[in-house]
Length: 484
Image 1 (tube, rainbow, N blue to C red):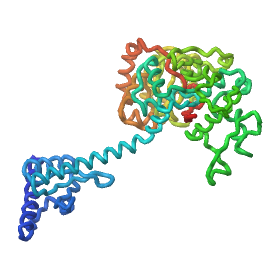
Image 2 (spheres, rainbow, N blue to C red):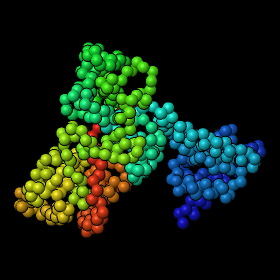
Image 3 (cartoon, rainbow, N blue to C red):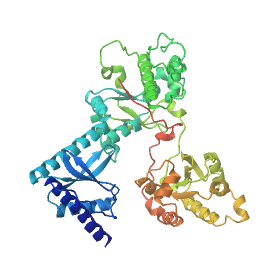
């Protein structure tokens, strides 16, 4: 009924404006009937492309749809259009002299919308042109531990990622036929292993060892060692005195460090940069091109030329910290605890209850969320049941003395198995902290968590494969890429 009354009121209002307009065009005077239901600000008379028009303001989207219906059904010489008003769209009713004039107006508006859409698309895909250029020119792409970086680029600028490595490899090869990972160079070559002295091959560490003068920011930006490649750096006046301070982990500076490491590594391999031959044709680099680490902790390497994987056989592999195999049925996600709690403290509280060997590993998702992997899958349901029981005993003296008291402090701690974690992540809602994400998705209810426990065994029957663990590196850096 409210819609019916609104439609009738709008029809009368538009009809009065239409009749006034025709009367003025025929030499008469304008009538100004009062309408207490529609404010002057909601119905403003303007001119659009020299045509009389009504600008509609302060109506809801539903009301605007009803007004559009009134115009299209009741007025042959009026056109309801939507035009851009800078940052937003404006709804307008325009008077046209004839059917031909109306068609011409609609064509102009359609072309304007198309042009604006093309401009937005062009602005949105600006960096895509850079990716296309690198791909078409078949440039050598250099990264440091860059398997995930390449995957991100393909996902954002090329297309959806395939579900298997076998399908993913040809996608990468067609886009970037020549990729080299400096981490592969540092670990695979004996000369560079000796240079690194079996030290960490993280980006910052490798940069500090191979490019000491550049890393220190003192003296010239070249190297004091005659055997090293001199690197020229141009910086603005604001950064010239302390040009690299705090720049680590910034994408541009990480790309710069990667390029410097690559230059010094090539120099140690005996590659002559003064020659005009392409780097991709250098025999001494052929053994390293298109080899990427799938998992740094286990030493798994994929050959993008063949799609085959192998485990690194170098002696340096024995120095790596072996990460435990990640089993999804054994994982519980805990969130919403106080940010002061660290992984070590959470592990201590769990092992006091379930035993010293009950917790295999703990990974921080953010400052108030962790993944806990138990040694046995049944410990997941045991923990969730005990947590639920403890929360019902907040007023008991035993609650304060229980090892879980710090973990449950604040009353906002949630927990669930890995299946619920996946449901939370699949939501279109996006929050910075996982605790906020879980609350927004409304999966922090006790009933939801307990239902997940009941179905956990069946859900994980065939999911005991290890996930890619590139994140096993200490910092989990997202590294920049450079093209050579």
